[in-house]
Image (cartoon, rainbow, N blue to C red; front, side, top):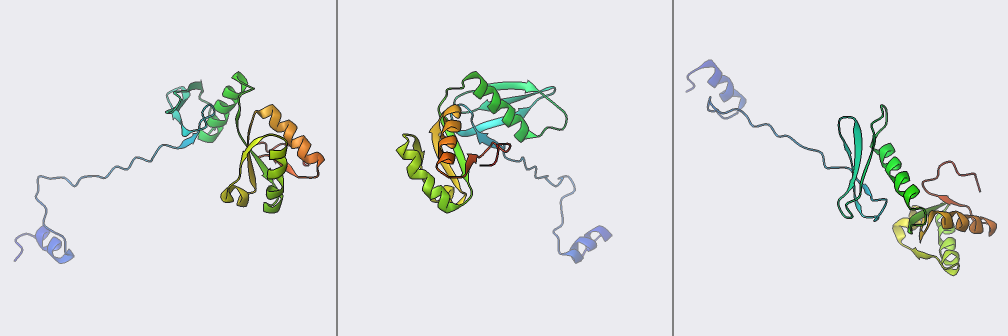
Length: 168
């Protein structure tokens, strides 16, 4: 039989009686860090970290460290793009994975043999095909030249991250 009104309420609700000296522990969930592809080593281990007045980019694989000033209204992807531009400006002839976007899966299938015939390293996978992407390992300048060659052959391709490229 319950002794106090508080105990009778707990008894009616089906909860256990708590000891008065212990607080209920709070569960604090820390969101996992947002990881990006490193602009130098291409590993998915690049983090954008916010400090008081500046923003830092850090890669756990190649130990790349970059900094920029914090600007109001910019999100994490904008800072990642800024860090990528910094790395590309410092080393423009670096070989990297560049993704070409096509209009259809069948066009992506047609692009692969042409790219290989022109001497570029490429990798074909089903998920990339269904996303209408073609991965080419080359420099940014050579990728632009490759796009021009593909457009001359009647294929509609663009750099995936280049949203302002002229229509084919």
